[in-house]
Image 1 (cartoon, one colour):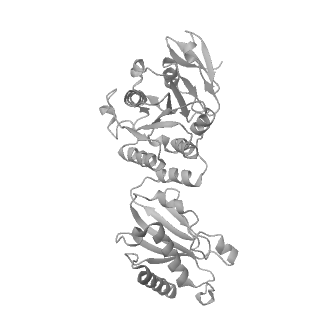
Image 2: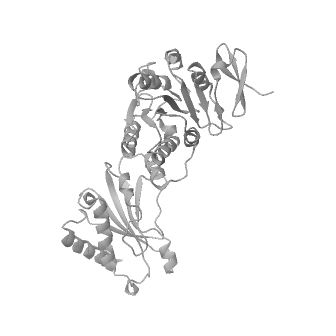
Image 3: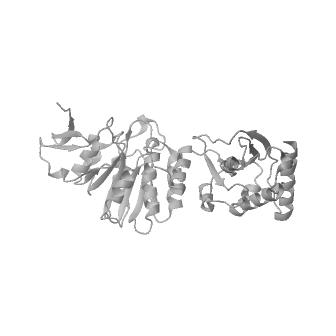
Length: 372
């Protein structure tokens, strides 16, 4: 290990002379069987192939722009285990990898408060085993919600989405034009909302989302200080730049993540529709597991609302608050599999079925019926 450490420091020195910069702090050295990242860690993986300094996904740098980096790990494999048997020019490879990181973001190599670690993986007895392990840099972000990091990972790596309802609904309704998207952006909706942004990113040229509006139910106010219609925590983002939308989502997340189980959906809808222009369709991306705290404002809705419900399952049938919003506004309700329209045409006592549940219109409001 001592020789490896000296070799690494030598590589840093050579790189410093050639590039006129160097990491601001001396790295720590450690050995592990294999490098493991916690699922809750806010990290960015700058991956390179075995014995290579080529960054596999250069676009990855977008994930740490404007973020504070607290630690960088440079991850290698200790293969062969005896340093004397190494065939790869170790110091040259280190310099090339540092140069590749510098090309992505030179500031990372000059910040004095970034902790550096050099990590050698030892769980490899053959070259194929070594090649199968991770190689490259791992950047740890400070004060950054890991759930947001997972959303960015979905956008860049196209990882599987936990709930693809919004994606599926937007995809099957290309006739919806010039869309104003109002999205519940409280803690339970972070993964679900990722599907909206992923769909928008993949269809950026013709997605026809003209505005995004995010609401967090009051910017972390105590529940007893959330007056109806004045709860706040409502933010607008232009839709033409994915990075701007993502930054706004992060800002809204930082300022609050909800509180109790009810949200200010109506306040967000009313502010969005009254202050913004140039849209034809109003889309509410809602959390089916949460009720609506300000349903009494429903009488002020002037435009049809298409309610896209995330989190509908056997344990969480469609929430009646959203059926009522759709019916009153002459809008519709959409789940991952169903579209429920013409709710406004229902008469007192009539029923409708969605998601395997029956709902009856009773005194002007929907009530879920137990199956006999």
